[in-house]
Each structure stands twice: as structure tokens, then as C-alpha cells.
Length: 143
Image (cartoon, rainbow, N blue to C red; front, side, top):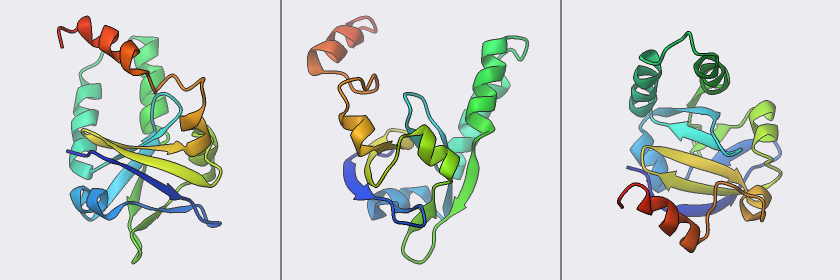
């Protein structure tokens, strides 16, 4: 289970340090891919396999399912940590998440989300709800 938020940055070679408490939970490596809401997702190999198993049972005849598989799997890459605990964020993923320099890295249960700080702080960020908004939304799920 991943949780907590860290503010960090990306260097000139597009490397980011995965915070040590999150890196320990990932194990020897991870999978990096495009997430939803214009952020990146980092999965442990175990959790990535679970996600693929969920995708496997979806109807491939549905064009939305096929599009999501292309979005999710077509942009995924396996990453190894260097000696400083860094991974490289490819330019395409960096652009997708609007990452410039500063990052917001947060645990989100079965994955880690990586946001460009400016995108995270933007008033147009649909991935960040105000307290009253998520309180109302969770009522729909009897939470």
C-alpha cells in the first residue's frame, strides 16, 4: 500500500528520485505509464500484473476498452532504479504529465502518482477535489 506525498524534482536528464519509503515498497523495479487525469502511474511489478489481469477480462470488442489498453499499456515501460534510487521519465510521458522541473509524488493505494507541480496546483486540475466535493461524491458509494 502506497501513501503519503513528497515534493521533489526531475533533473536535466529526466531522472526523478523515487522517495525511499515508496521505493522500498516497489521492490527491485517498477512499471511507469500514463495515468488518468494527466499524471503518471508507477506500479510494482506485482500490482502491474494485477492491473493487466483486470484488463484481460474486459471486452476487446469495445473500442473504449481498446483505446484504454493502448493508453495504459502502450506507454508503459519497466524501470530499474539506479544507485541513487532514480528512474528516467521518457520525454513523451514527461510532456503528457506537464512535468517541467518540480514534482508532486504521492502514494495512491496500489500505485504511485507523479504530477507536475504546476499541473497539480492548477485550478483546472480535475484529479484534485475540494473536501466538500469528494464528500458529496463518496456519498454515492455509501462511504
